Length: 100
Image (cartoon, rainbow, N blue to C red; front, side):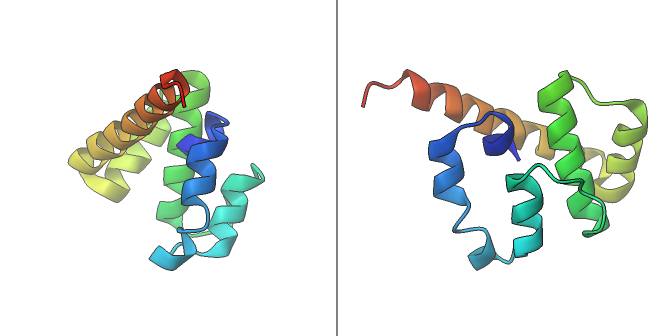
């Protein structure tokens, strides 16, 4: 979600082909890749996509989505999800900074 939302082609290209190998359904990859509505896939997967999109687009999470995410993943899980998104944003910035 972070690679797609930051339009970082290198990070996306590195992760997209690996996702199905690690159990991510192609429908989920396509939902992210083509910016489709996330409904119709698993509840947790939908929440992760919505969380990532909202955080990166709006720079905040609505109270409803935060509560839903805590219900699904626990407070620690939401902290870890947020940290993971931040980590990938930092990676995209560093990759853009490095002179290849």
